[in-house]
Image (cartoon, rainbow, N blue to C red; front, side, top):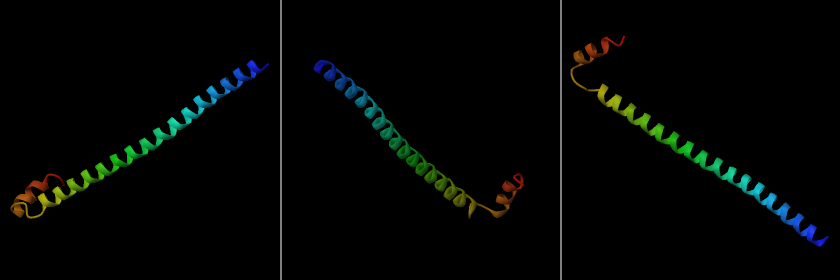
Length: 76
């Protein structure tokens, strides 16, 4: 009877350990995914800001106003 009880406790411990490991791994994976998403969003924001700054820099005082008008005329 004691042998059966030992095997039962060992089996429950193995199942419990597997379940706990799975839950723990999922939590760690979700946390890493959130960090990666935040990092990607920050990089994208920085790229957008740089493109905006470049557009303003190229748009203001970038050559003759008449040339800029001709260049932008096709976009309207």
